[in-house]
Image (cartoon, rainbow, N blue to C red; front, side):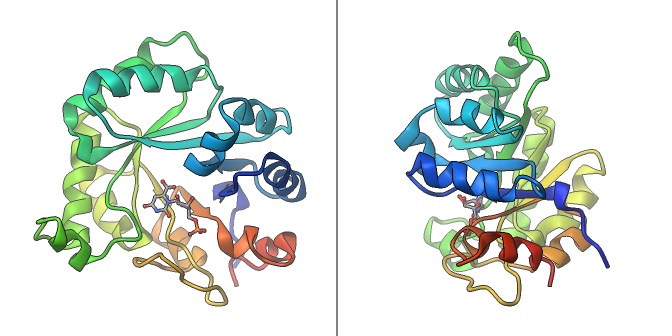
Length: 231
Ligand SMILES: O=C(O)c1cc(=O)[nH]c(=O)n1[C@@H]1O[C@H](COP(=O)(O)O)[C@@H](O)[C@H]1O
């Protein structure tokens, strides 16, 4: 079975601009969306987004905004000027916060508008981690609650683990985007990810995008690792 590499987002978790751009240049024939997270953004600032765009690639600007509604609205507005293709906020910031982020995107004079996603339950957390913060629900139940809040707040989709795809689809429908990190080919180490499936399983379950970092970027030959992502 052949899998669609346009659904693959590569996470550039490095503080180093040259290393990030090297990976983009090495993989851009196959993948067109790269993720700039807090490590790269805090090290290099917003200009890194333009530099990746100049390579002909799109950027998921993954800053996981989570604050009071007014502050998140301002930060989302500031993110829009970077030219990002995707932005995210934490669903657990609440519906009012997510609606303010939605308004900031809708009111901005940018075209096309970025996709606005909500983080549900981080893929590094399991049931015992949720219990430790007094959330006495399974990750699946909590993801469903947060995904429905995100949908009600007008967001375009959510970030969740592949294990929750079918529950989100059933609750939120086919036109709600599902982006799944926590993907690990059978040949890769799980590391700090707890709710995982393989990239092939995640796409079979119906993920719109999968996010993968270290199995590709930390491999001795990232291009070869990308080629065998679905094995
Ligand atoms: O928002 C994310 O992208 C994200 C959400 C989540 O729940 N889990 C998660 O791992 N991520 C990100 O996805 C990437 C996964 O990287 P690897 O674990 O190296 O494949 C990292 O950049 C994380 O910040």
